[in-house]
Image (cartoon, rainbow, N blue to C red; front, top):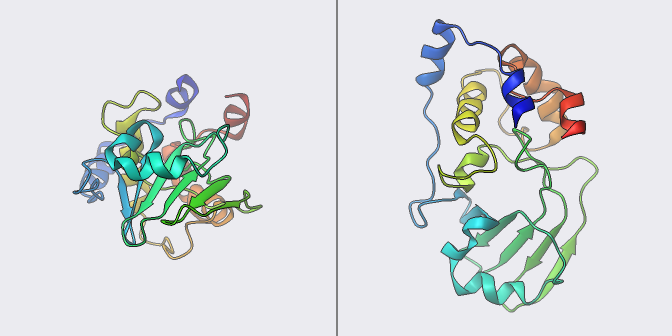
Length: 186
């Protein structure tokens, strides 16, 4: 986290005013914490207890040694996904790695990490303000920064390759992403 803080650039007063006008998404109204997308809620595993027995039951269907970071609960289907995201705490847009998907009938299937992985935006939605793994306020500032850029094709930002080649260059003046060498040494 120190490397992150060292790489932050000073934001001008004009940029600060512009960024503060951006409306941020809100955490799950149902659980108080979580990112809601398409009938599913995504939570950091530290908060999985908020989902109740459905997670405990689904966990029995995945390998006991599987290390996951994010839990996705699909309220429509009752399915639970356990998602590895090893860089969750130190990348602004962490990558989705391996996934175990457990259907409501407890049948489980494994999805390997993709060559061009999906990434998470607004990771602060998946944790509480008291989360110690990363600076939650800095993560909110990152959301404000990229949401304020008008030219972003939001239909394509879910893949790491597009994000890195088309969006991060627009944010480089804000220095809100770790330098490549800092990511590798963390």
